[in-house]
Amino acid sequence: MDIKIRQATQNDSETIAKAVLESSRADKNVGIFDFIFQAGDDAGLIEFLQKLATTGTKSYVHYSNFIIAEVNGEIAGVLCGYEPRIATHEVFGKALNEVGIGGEYRERISGYLIVEPEIDKQTWVLDFMAVKDEYHEFDVLKELIRKSLLTARLKGYRKAQTVVEIGSVEAQMVYEKLGFHLIDEKKSDYYKEQFGRAGIMRLQMEL
View 1 (cartoon, helix red, strand yellow):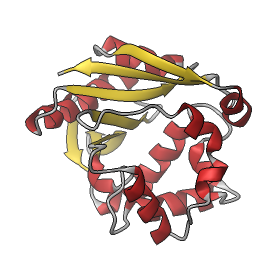
View 2 (tube, one colour):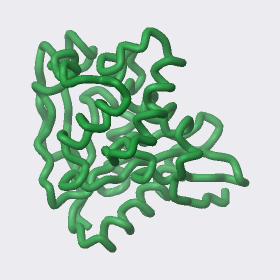
View 3 (cartoon, one colour):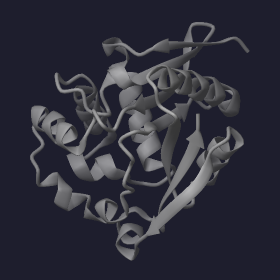
């Protein structure tokens, strides 16, 4: 399988929105963006996420942080890689303001904020990995992650991290197979009540 990796463009906003929705739900009925946007249906939520991916403020969900895997010219997978020292909480809040969401969204995701890991600002972060069902997941993700980590090294980063929900076994296995290891986890009954999972685990890889 010939896999080509390219930088995402603004024209990929719908693809990115769908990948963000799928990844954030992680086989659950709801994810963090369901609570942030309260869109009512998936079409409305994807529309909000498309707008968020193309705001003037470059949050971690901005299309410029995404790379796209293609097989025979067709999109096969998506991955986000970003710098938390640049894509801060404040930047995310500003981007949400641009699409009409005020600071009260934090109350709606309080279950997540309880277990949210503290990310070292000198760390490259991977997020929102998604591969279409018709493609071999591991092969596509391996190429996406390899490309993202190359970018991280070129920017001077020496470690990369990702966050996976406790119970997201497939995602955890993919990252561990590629050299990531568990460094900590946080659990909360409130998170479990809100999102249906015990909590969050943090995986890291030295570059």
